[in-house]
Image (cartoon, rainbow, N blue to C red; front, side, top):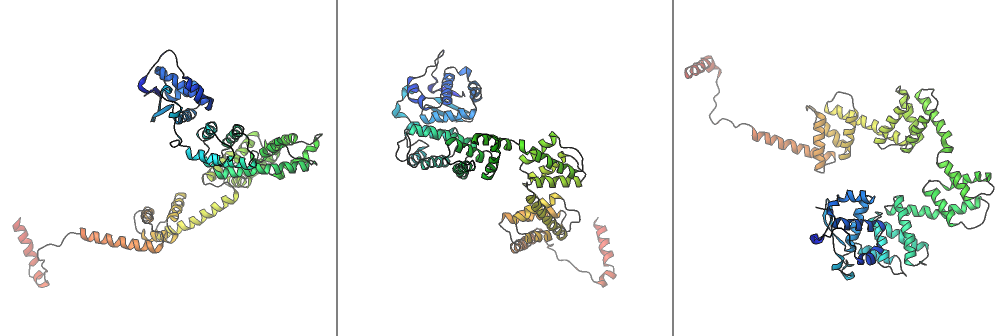
Length: 484
């Protein structure tokens, strides 16, 4: 099936006619990419031999497939296309000549009906029309922002303006810029949005503190507040970081936010921290037992350690352990850090806690071995298995399962079988496990008894000592020979 086709398979070759209703009524409210997608698909309807599916359209228009699918969802809501299949996606174009504006999707069936009502309620005093609704709906379809995040953004903007809202088109132009920025920042939950707004509000306080540090007394400009917001949200600088950098602005003729921005950029780009990094690399090399001097390769590797989320004490601990085991390179440190990363630990405190837990579970595993009769060293897979067991049921119940496994051919497998069975039945405590195991043994014994061979129906005869001595055994054997 073609990606796009006319309803009824109408075809006109040589040209691609575009109805005036589309140009006058639909095109003004759509984004440029959405219009391009609609027109290209319209051409494919007239020239199906050019149809190479959604991937071919993406290549031809130089846009991604997600934008194409968003465009068709938009045109589907507008009533201009109808989806035929989902996988692969195919659409049917509907002729505009067969409809009028009254035939467009009504609010009752419009999937964003409730959202649009909430959007209007969030902006009292102004009346929204289809243009504003389409822009807001595109924040969901194109930017993938959730409804609650969008409504929070709109209410925050309205509160910031103190209820004095500009004309809808002016307001939504600003909101569209904000929505794009929030999407680029990855603000896809209310918690993330609230944290972002809190930092943005604090930016004005940062700017005021900087102006005071400059020895000036004036309100901050919009651009200065925007710089402070960047320092906070993008560069993760605290107000103390910013204020301390103000001291370096005395090198200039007049202290300014622009000069301060360059100073802070120098710091966050790493230029001012390279010397500190080299000193720390020297410490790591000393733990590895090598007298090599820090190189650019060392610096790159160290930056990768930091970017992976490890603090220096954790990296240093990795170097110490590598040195103790006669491993002398940064690649050895990387392997050790990779192991810790897989375990979800990146700070020295987390690493020490994990080592404590590992020691604790090593002791528990040894107790399990003792109870079930295993005589060998504990390995990592044993500890991992025991940690799973103790997550499913109580430790006392795990130790009881080990006692039950004593004497079996594969004790660890038998313990695992018991614990999985108990957990599936909601059994977690020692008392419940004991009752379940006793019931299991009783049922097993009863089943074995029922399966044992029945006693012979004839009367068995016992032989006395006198009979045996009088030749009973010989007589029986003779009769057996006669029968044969």
